[in-house]
Length: 455
Image (cartoon, rainbow, N blue to C red; front, side):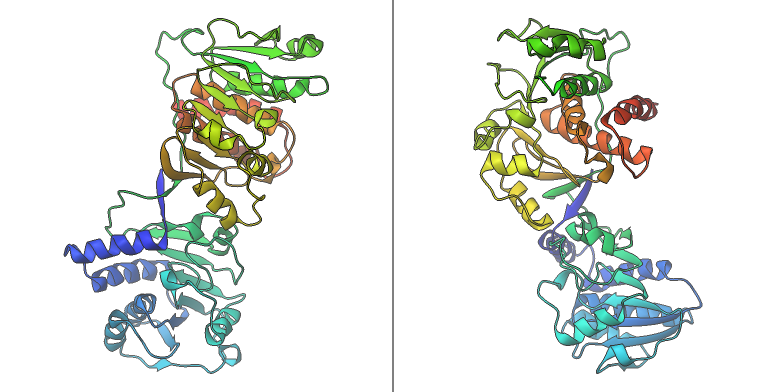
């Protein structure tokens, strides 16, 4: 997984590096500037915006390197340089530093590149009129942002401003580089290695799934038995898709426990699963239980691995279920609000804040664009970045819940099963292409993807 840092975590890393003597602020700036230099094409005019702090120091170091390379460079400042590093870099730059009363009225060379080095990590409040005018001047231009676009706050993925062409992200990804809608405004993000060792982070980007490794002589019994309490009149398809998800994820056996009225209907659609009428008693030999798809709200007594989805996610019960080890909840945002008694999130930051408040040994997979995996005895938030809007259709959540149960029954830890299922689910959609799709399309793509990952 890839660490995704907050501004405070990044500042702490930099402070530890400088305090230990491993690197000075100027060393870090030189490394950042060299990396940014490699991203800019040769033979173009470059307009550099240098802010008053360390981000301005990065920009001024880049200006010097561009000048040394023989490029046409102009540096624009927003008044007094307040950081020692920015002042030092300004002294090393031999060109003129300009100031504009209104950058929207300036004439820039056609095809010029702009370097946004105004604020970076220090962007934590609304822009003043001068900085806002520069952001307006950048609309439609080719822009390289140093660390992040200056209108953007590193810990807040919401907001709006001009899109950049490239972002040189120093040290590690920040939340604004990963979470939408900010991520789409960063252009192509290039992470610059500053030699800082990230040992801890609150947020992590899931970049690959954890997969079970069955023994060479595995049999259906050793690969786990999932029981699925799902399916009612008018919603038998949910049970079919959940069973299909568990089987496609690798479960050895699946038993669907359905209302008697729909048992035959389900059995005809998925012959690979056992289908029994629900009698109130779980069959012997079950290793994990999935409850909820297809309008089923009753949760049987069960002490083993449990996945709750859809109708089983009952109002106000979130904290109680999160206190139960071996439990995985799979709510969409509306179900999450009902479960935990919170308002339905109205922004990415609001959704993230609500997610960070969920704790306990249980695991919650908060579905939606960029699903979040929470809990499991940790305060970490795992961010999934696979998938697209084509997944927003009936049945895909049932298939995902089955995948979670199918991975869990093969020995993955609850958090691993939830996050890996979300990654695989979205990756299948990505491979199928952006556009409308059916849950059954995922069922056809998943075995192909898994074969490639196991190769």
